[in-house]
Image (cartoon, rainbow, N blue to C red; front, top):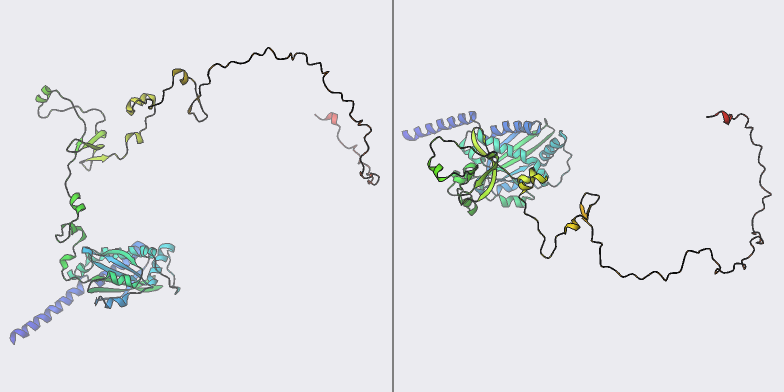
Length: 412
């Protein structure tokens, strides 16, 4: 009896100590209250506070009653392919959109509409900021493991899709009552995190590659194979006698402009790229050249033709090159391009003799023209009929006196 009484006393003392520690520690409720206000002020320049918070555990079936087709529902992507969920009331979604577009939150109108992917994108920053900032400041290990590694996923168009995503048996449910712009809008945001018995499954995303339970893919295995590349600044030719005479500390004179033209060579000697050798923060570095030299430094002068390394252009099969005489027959068009004139010379044509043509020198003899005496007399043509009489025209008034006009002779 004495031992059982002692155990009861110890359990009561331990429970009191746990409550005192939790009262002083940073719990998930306290962290969400503080972080929500800071995130709203930094990201949206608005006042937002948590006026109520409820943390509970629910079965998957009990979570169904939290789904609302009028609210924004989305999944949360967690570590080890776990799935969570977030539900944001329509009034909170409308307030966030108003603040980001008009910098002012107004009273809700009461009109309901279907949520879209744009609404999800406008609210994703708030959810991601809470999920990134709250877990690092939590002091209770179980709460920290509950929220670590989650991020905003995809929007669920209806409650049926949301229930298909949340396939765990139980969930940690956090219901936040948010107040926006000092009471202008209020609504709930609900977070759902799966309850996992083995906490080692929820690893930090940065340690996912070291997780022995994670199945490796072919691409991850190939990308993890080391590849050795050599950077060749220049190549020097030295006689065998000079190579044998090399001593420690001996220096070589490198060719001009060798560091900007370094080559990246594989173990087999194949050149796969080039770049410029330099340093960054005291360490040796190589800046890759993504464009060929001729793209940034074009060479168009005749004196640069050797540097272009262009092949000699010859005639195509079945075609003849221009003869020297034809090259001289090229002229410039209006846009400066060279146009080749066709060869106008052809075979000689026998033209007929012109000696039998009549003499056209005497053009004054017009005796062969016909007689024109049969033309009618134009003076005897009758007067046109139907013209109106001009007796009824009005009389014109006397013209004004023009004596006051200036003398034109005096004008220059």
